[in-house]
Length: 74
Image (cartoon, rainbow, N blue to C red; front, side, top):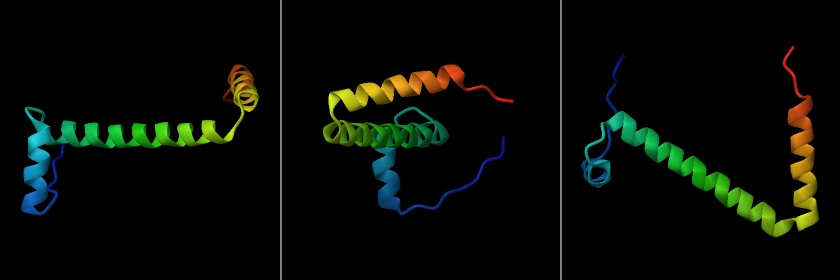
């Protein structure tokens, strides 16, 4: 595995080290990235569900299931 260095201000490193704990940097940074992506998806979903009616959401769910059943790679 090849390693690289990422330069960050000392204050940023101190803050990140508190959350990092015993994890290595790669593992911790991937964790932060995945958490952020999860939060973005959750926020988008919540916004969407506040705009759409329950019937529209149910139609989207059915349509998605139908698409997945029929989808095949060639």
